[in-house]
Image 1 (cartoon, rainbow, N blue to C red):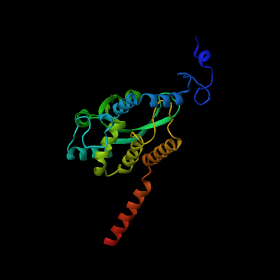
Image 2 (cartoon, rainbow, N blue to C red):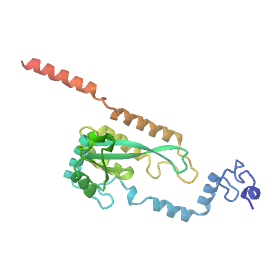
Image 3 (cartoon, rainbow, N blue to C red):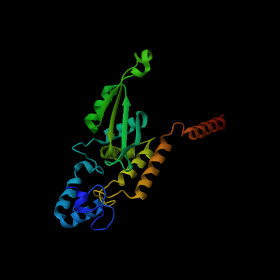
Image 4 (cartoon, rainbow, N blue to C red):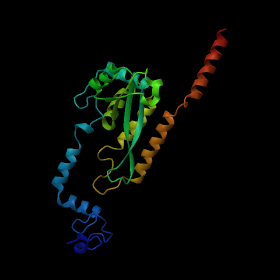
Length: 237
């Protein structure tokens, strides 16, 4: 017996289109509301399960990792000089909207740095060769990419923030984005869409980060420094 024949094509609760999900003759949003009202204990357990240790990034210790202040300062220096801070795109499970997640990458040709990042911060790494360069790249060393994403990336940026010299603004943008993912920021649940104003805010953060990471964006600052240095030299002479 087809569900469409059994329930019809209209939601029994709101009268709207039944859609693909035909649960008790209700559309997806109405069914979710009904389930929350009739199964409060189950929903409470599920909500508690989602707030696990993996989500607690706004702390000094994360998943058993607690680096020293010296280690945080070192990592901040490596990210400043050998790293990249970004908001990487990803599709939601149903592919109906585009969202982002924070990402921190540290690159180097020495595997000791990658191992140090893995041991102290849990940053998994992969190696990339230079086959694309043909014969020219045969003499080049392989490059190791140590990276952290999402909650772990936010934890790293949060603790590196006082030590950054060059990438503090980028870190603040990613942390502002991470704040929008906290439980309780907006109503979540199956069939519940992310508010459009929140999606627009995340996109504005993405665009701001692209502008900060744009190559040559510091050209004006360099020109100002050169001019200042020249004026100081003239005044001294």
